[in-house]
Image (cartoon, rainbow, N blue to C red; front, side, top):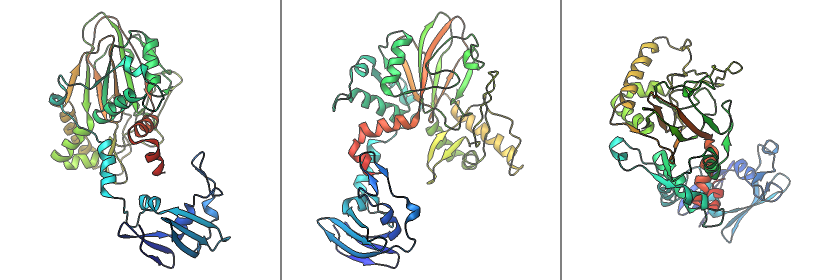
Length: 393
């Protein structure tokens, strides 16, 4: 795989798959995987990176059997690196084959949708298949399919669920651990204001995400309507990522503003609770590469916005909200669906908005939150395979 080694003052340059890529000496020493530096059983570092000499350099470098062997100036420490591992983690420039990157993106691709895409075509899985799955090598195929549907579309229905909170809780735990909050762990509630939140009323609640008042917003949310003897209470779903793309195209300035203006939020209905995030986040949260990773939107829980780095942004912000609301509330983007006993709904709370229309009569609902990191861990392991996931560490 390698044809040459070029030694620089602070770097080694290798030719991997015909491409020259450079590694800093200190980076290579920091990523030694010998048993003194890395505990393979737990996949954890043992080396204290701060103890590496800032001028560390190799005193001997060889390549044998597709491995790079380095003896370091500090303590004559010996490191061995698989060339395939170096290729996977190369950074200056990256040389990972395009097909490898594209394959992972394909396996974990998302399908943005509008109302017409989901009418009579809602993604769904079967409760009995999920519950029959096991941790055996091929036993989690149903859970894998479930995870992929949630990730790809942002939500999934689960059919043939016994109409009991016990069965619903077991379903949640089949996917991942239930996240406890001040609402409890697994919820079973009616519109009795048992908790001081509008979810515990019969009010109309517009499209939103839950938990904008938490720094760690819940990743997934599951609902099961156990009983309703009245009218209304229809649920809606909105693909907020699709809507963000529309906003970016139609009103780029508004999109840009909603990625920057921090929006404070709170939960303060309970007597002993006043939850606020450590740092207020914008409506549209981007990663370091400018890609949208989360939408945080809840008109009800927004706090007083009295801290502006530029007061001239105030009217621009409200104009952006109008543009945004017009898109997310459009019948083309918001699909309404009547939940029923025996069918659960789970959705990505970082991507999909949900709502509920006003209702009459008695309505009993149960459900839970599930942490996003835990869900994504299961998704990647089931979809990519544990070995492929470990290669990225």
